[in-house]
Image (tube, rainbow, N blue to C red; front, side):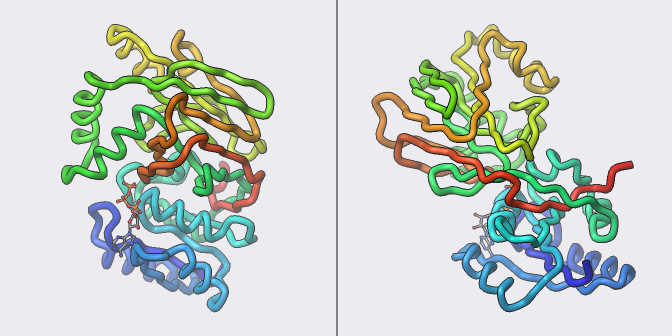
Length: 295
Ligand SMILES: Nc1ncnc2c1ncn2[C@@H]1O[C@H](COP(=O)(O)OP(=O)(O)OP(=O)(O)O)[C@@H](O)[C@H]1O
């Protein structure tokens, strides 16, 4: 791995990108690698990046940004042999945490010369790519409100969540997978290739990203008195222990929202409105990722 491309999002996170770029250049020079940089524009980035990669062959491509930038680069590299590296610079950095990539920039950059290559599955959710998580219901609403607001950080997220929780009306869903059907009301419903949200909530414990399957993780409506217990379980790998949760393992799913023609969905932190039913399918092991070398 000699030629490395770093895809930088100039607006992600609070870190000064010029100093990150300098650090990358220094480390690459020390290790005999050539670093190239590609800055995202926020406009048509997927097609532009794909075209750039066609014209400028690389040995690996690093996403240096938040979840949106990782999603962009992962999609550009899916169905190719080029591996994805991640330099986490966002607020959540969900996929990098799931892959055990250090959250410290300098430590993450050790992936340049010390790594293993894993093949992982990715998902298409009604035409939208994700290697991580998508969801419908409460969290999708909070992500949308958060994106609309001008305050950032975990404090703002919790404040919005508490406000919205008071007036939240769960919808009724009909979930049809390749092996089962479930219908009922849900507080939220996560289509999960991975295990953990960027907030460290474990929505899909003991799951694998390379097994050719994904999970639909359902949290059913619960009384306010049960909320602390559920939160505790979500932070301690106890998702399946709650009386209000269930997981459906599958290769594809069709999710209808009863009585609705459109639904709010968040995909890798991006709030969307999609027509129902929402459909998700898996692309087995079609993305190569760099993770820290074991031992
Ligand atoms: N040059 C740019 N100007 C404006 N927006 C951009 C630019 N480049 C990328 N974007 C937008 O940035 C968003 C992705 O941001 P990203 O997720 O990487 O960072 P973040 O939001 O700070 O991180 P996190 O999602 O972890 O909080 C996308 O909506 C993308 O369109």
